Image (cartoon, rainbow, N blue to C red; front, top):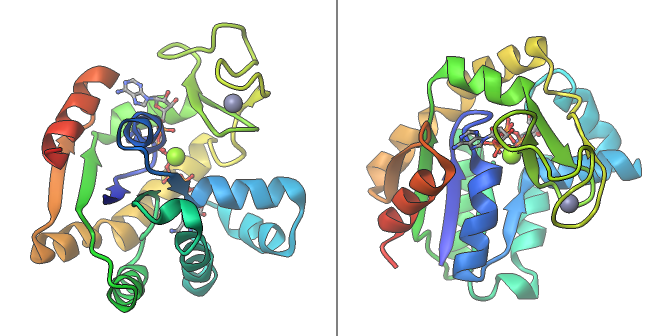
Length: 214
Ligand code: AP5
Ligand code: MG
Ligand code: ZN
């Protein structure tokens, strides 16, 4: 099962991805998480990505595409994968289609999670994430059991550098201009499902499972 999660910043892609990956036994691949890991480790890729991420801009396409292609040929993707935050531009989507065709793979479903912007802003300003495993929390909606400590892995729970109001607003703008055209792109391909992401976690998850139909 090859899945893509699409949706604006704060829609709940990362949150839902954990449950989806667990249910279908496929790896959760978040380009944002991979970039943040590289930033933390100070790798050359991380240094380059940080310049863009801190401003809420997209990391250049070619860097991102190479990263994903390298990841998808690893062994744990043999039975499928769940991409979170990729593709994010039409160029990335076209290159991704070419990669799938070349490897005899097909996209099972694109899941587009949609939420109104005022709800998104609150979600993102209140978001905290685990530095070690990337699990998202929220100061009021979903706090960790022990403040500052990840429930799953015991890692440090912190606030992302790009979750400030100013950067978040730019990320919305970037989403609208560069990523939202992908909805029409996948509409044309006929394999997109639209999910209302404003409800409770379990309600959203049930709608996703229903849309996947397996
Ligand atoms: P990335 O990490 O992908 O960020 P994003 O797309 O902006 O999305 P978020 O992670 O902010 O939101 P989410 O949908 O995962 O929401 P979450 O589940 O955390 O990308 C970061 C940066 O990396 C980009 O700006 C770019 O620079 C770079 N990048 C990444 N991919 C790239 C690519 N392909 N090309 C180029 N550059 C790329 O939930 C948000 C909050 O809401 C949490 O606090 C959560 O607890 C809460 N919440 C979730 N669901 C609910 C619910 N149902 N009810 C109440 N609260 C909820
Ligand atoms: Mg995320
Ligand atoms: Zn963790």
